[in-house]
Amino acid sequence: MTQNTERLPAYSLFAALLAAAGLPIYIHAPKFYVDEYGVSLAALGAVLFGLRLLDVVQDPLLGKLSERLRDHRSTAVAVGCAVIAVAMFGLFAIPPLLPPLIWFGLTLTLVFSAFSFLTINFYAQGVMKGTQMSGQGHLRLARWRESGALLGVCAAAVAPVALAALFSAPFAGFAFGFCILAVAAAVAMRSEWSTVGLAPASGFGVVLKDPLARRLLLIALINAAPVAVSSTLFLFFVESRLAMPGFEGPLLLLFFLSAAVAAPFWSKLAERIGPKDVLILAMILAICAFGLTLTLGPGDWVLFAIICVASGATLGADLTLLPAIFANRMARISPSAAEGFGLWSFVSKLTLAFAAVSLLPLLERAGFESGAAANNSAEALGLLAFLYAAVPCGLKLIAIALLAMTNLREV
Image: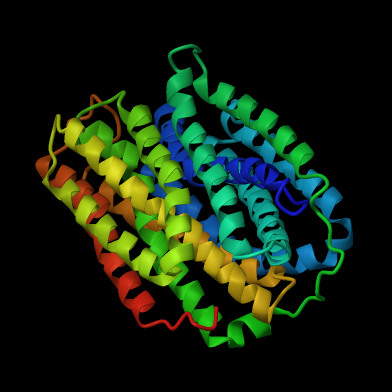
């Protein structure tokens, strides 16, 4: 095994840390603050949207900061890991020291800021790593990185539910476990933050002026939206539409575990026939699988489990191939990559803002109430099903059209 590849498990572990601080927080945090502190869905949606507006300015600036600190990247990343661990502990393990909504916003601001900074550094480092590797290095690195990320999502998605069977404060246990993971990931990657031979910063202009880079960012934005929508509503859908409280954890695990298992398959297939064709195939399969969710009602958890397996498997292609394609493009036009992945981080999280600010208030206005004992009307449950299933399928169709019209020969 060469020197360039023997450290790839460290990339998997660090990706697991970032993944645990990303999507699962959108799944767990709103419902936790609704159930534990009685905060309204609309208020939480407004706070989440405000945080994403912060990212409009913050993520590109964090990309700049990453470049400024490139010669001290190891120290900067260690500080980022410490911030995200402390903030996660404050979010879930400490009773709010301020009014719950303010505490929610404050701790999430720290979580997401550290998350953005660490993600930008991690993916920028990955561009250099993939370039140094033989063969299709970016796809091989993506296979390790995104498999680790998906396993991290699996663990973070199911951990609070699993810990509920053992502890009276499962989210505190989750936060403590996250802190341990942060330390382990920082230690594993400490020797990887080298910038020797890295090209100087090229600025945002190079990325934004490149037609293919702009198109890839747009595809990333549209294609991430279905996952943002379904993730935001997943717990509510299982609990209220399927009327299966307590099944959320196993079904989430099934979904993300399917993605983790399938990710290496999609990557290897892309090496053989090309990432564009593989992505389009996966997107079509995702629509076919997820569209069936519209037909489900109370008690249909077996059918939903099958849909989780199928749609989760297709997610593995999205999360593995798109970042690899973008990284390959950055290696050609902006090798330092920090600014490019600052923009990538921004568009990825903007989809979660869309989901929070639009879907949660819509549900609340329709009279939807969270909780297994809530008596929701047929109209409210119908809207929940429509938003959860139909909206993602429509967005996926747009992403397919954009990708089909994109020439990836330059990548």
